[in-house]
Image (cartoon, rainbow, N blue to C red; front, side, top):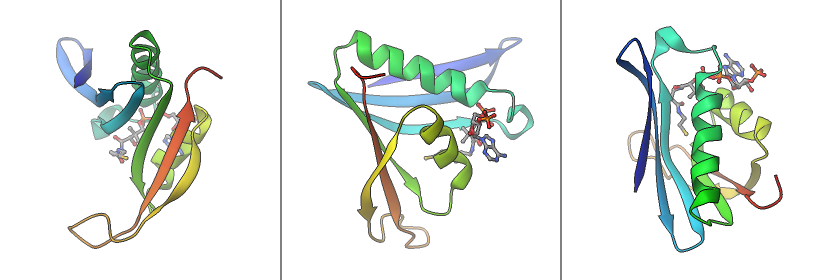
Length: 108
Ligand SMILES: CC(C)(COP(=O)(O)OP(=O)(O)OC[C@H]1O[C@@H](n2cnc3c(N)ncnc32)[C@H](O)[C@@H]1OP(=O)(O)O)[C@@H](O)C(=O)NCCC(=O)NCCS
């Protein structure tokens, strides 16, 4: 498990969690503090996570995202992630479906 944090003036304003098992990597979570969104910090965190996964020799990276979370999906598509299926009733708080997205790391 790896956790990247993004700091502005010594304050953590974003983070990204990554699990790597053999050559398979997953983003477990990524978030930027509301006041700091829209400044490409999320993109920088995800790019750093992808770089780390490549360094650790992972060949694919996947994640789950709420079907309603179009902002995060847009970020993932921008960095080459493609939809790979739906996990029904994945989120226990409201029963929302998850969209599975993935990218091959050796092609980008
Ligand atoms: C998703 C999240 C991490 C994006 O972080 P961010 O720093 O605000 O995003 P960035 O400024 O790096 O934007 C990068 C890309 O994300 C997408 N994006 C970001 N904000 C957007 C918005 N308001 N509307 C649409 N797309 C948006 C765009 O594709 C953008 O690229 P562009 O600027 O070239 O259009 C942030 O919105 C967040 O923390 N959300 C709450 C937690 C969350 O949903 N995490 C994902 C769980 S799977």
